[in-house]
Image (cartoon, rainbow over all chains, first blue to last red; front, side, top):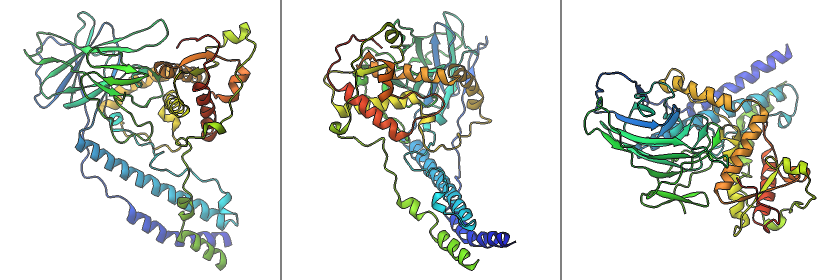
Length: 281
Length: 190
């Protein structure tokens, strides 16, 4: 009975704290950015391109499962950072409530609150909020090919913007990848070849592709203009490798990309660990 | 009883102030004085059994490389090898892909990943592969080491992770070796 009274009293004391916590609760976001992509499959009819969408075409000698990610515009990066800050505030508030509850329970039970095990405090450094790229991931293949002539061709409709190549199956290009622009109303084409080297490494050979198909509008296909995009975190915990040097675009010096023509593309500002140093010599 | 409630009230008045004040030092950012890092023992009488295990037990070295640079490279590669998911002290609930096309398609990649990373042994093997590729691409040569000596300043990680302070202490020793005298033994390649 005494314990029950104590708990009720403690709960009453907790209320103002909870109210204050509720007041700190970040306001809900008004509008969410929509993210959707669509595979264009092998149909005999001509493809009608949506002028508001971009189209990414990946050609490979065999069936593969490429993973691409969209890079944020300045505006999208700012919005993403705001989302992350709000999510962090919610997580920290939740942690504080949990710690307060643990300490209160210990005190009421006559125990030393400092000896109770508490959850790790979320900090801006260890807060595991997904990057913009992770939230804007595009999975292609290995099925739903657009064409099976001379290999496998995948065609994906996606929002226009800049994209990075991230992985094929369970191997990522985390140690060095490339980006390319995908403008609205166009088909951006790239050749992709996963390479198996005798030393056990499995890098990716990428290049802009010249591709023609009568089902695509004349003049709509552009070879992807690749740019060095630096490393990316191993978000999925898979095997790491990299994109092979692209002649006239970039090479590697001691594992870091060195741009030969284009400027390196900066990574999303979110990354909680391992800030990518794109294109640094 | 009143005393207890008062104590509880006092605690709630500043529920986590002490916690917040106790700013945790990020051990992954500290650059130790190389002179304070113990150089591990590397010399041993090589046997066939040792050579058979060089795919597991090895260390790195690169010429013209300072301790700080080697430590930065090892930390970067350790992060790549570990994978971000297991490298965080605090994990946010995974982002809500449920119900989206990307989420549905992601199931395919997820199954591929699951197939590739089944079991603790496979995870340890994956870590070794990733360390070798990452350090190899950075120009570090790989040298074989006896298992007992290797275990003195390396760690393996399957489903469980080594405590961060221990990880960093071992990475510092690895950096001391990587930036030290060139080993007399043969290079193993990536």
